[in-house]
Length: 271
Image (cartoon, rainbow, N blue to C red; front, side, top):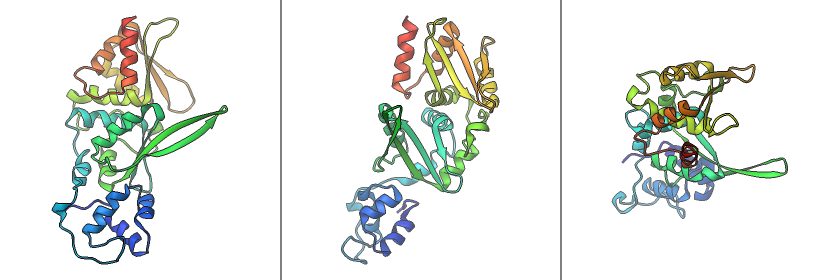
């Protein structure tokens, strides 16, 4: 039986007379999941030590699958979510926490990420932020895994990546999957819009190093690489037919994408 990485901490909290609800809140894990694994370990909500329960009679959760997901990027989904984490993911410096936060309108996409990790029983955290007398709601999904954190770091997804991010090499993401990675990154740190001079425009943010390698992938000389602050933050801009060509490549043979951006592409490409 493979146990989740937080089980020892859950037992420690339980022995300090914390109930399931408190443990679930502390570990950001669904209460039923806490109950399931503590019961397998011989604990119950009513007594400290009980007989072992037959695991075959309880629902199973495959946490080992989740742990191995980023060992090797060899599928569309893995490449896509790595790109998305490059853009919008948070990797803790001192802990083994990985987080992804999206605005309320994109909560279904966050659910896709949770399903990809096989962690459907973990809950989201709602966050509210007030700006200009308006309340903006977002949702965050977090989990702890030392192995996944180390695997992501090997793949170039590191803490404080905003100013140091580099485009992945072929060993990190195979060339046949790189367009899926770019689509994930674009869904996190890119936008598809129109302007007074172009019916469709593709803009992606990143470090100079990252976007320079991205330019090599596009094999297009009409790209504009613009620095918009004194820090190492740049934006890459394609418009018109060039934007359509790149987006067609990015969406080629895709099964996962942020639907509102894909629909925006279809809308503007038809204009």
